[in-house]
Length: 176
Image (tube, rainbow, N blue to C red; front, side):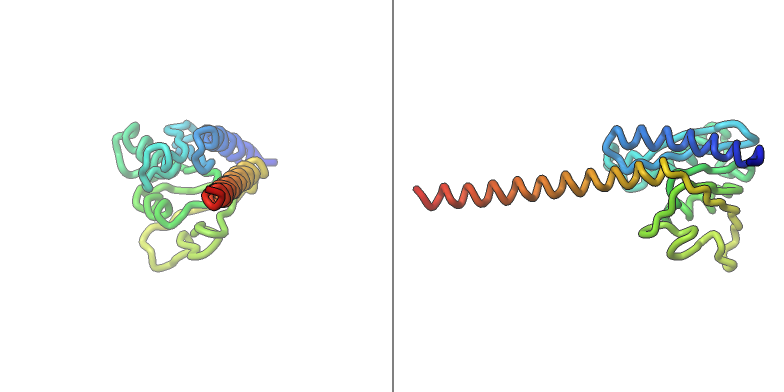
């Protein structure tokens, strides 16, 4: 394993720690880290549910923090490490902030736009060229799978509770 890959794994692990924070808050467990010249500039995790704001994806929050810290919206020399393939909104912000490279550790078959769906970073007609790498990480994949499995189970339990409430209430009402 080359030194560069080791560094990428290190920063992806930091992003994963951010994803764990999101998970503990009941957020979709996605974390992001902005690195410039080998130094961590910012870290963030999803806060959409917590802040009731659809823009609060990990990538956008990390980019905002990095821009503030570097006092520039241009992040030309920065690499963004993310635990999940970016969506279209985040890919747009990544391009507009001039991030040099994106490295992510889990594919998003539903909403991802780097390897799946639109493949926006490969689009020749766009003015910004973003390098990217996919380094699969079972931890990042599994935390997402577990999160959505738990959410489905919660939803099913709530449906079961609703059905029981309706059924037993209806039964009780008929006896009256």
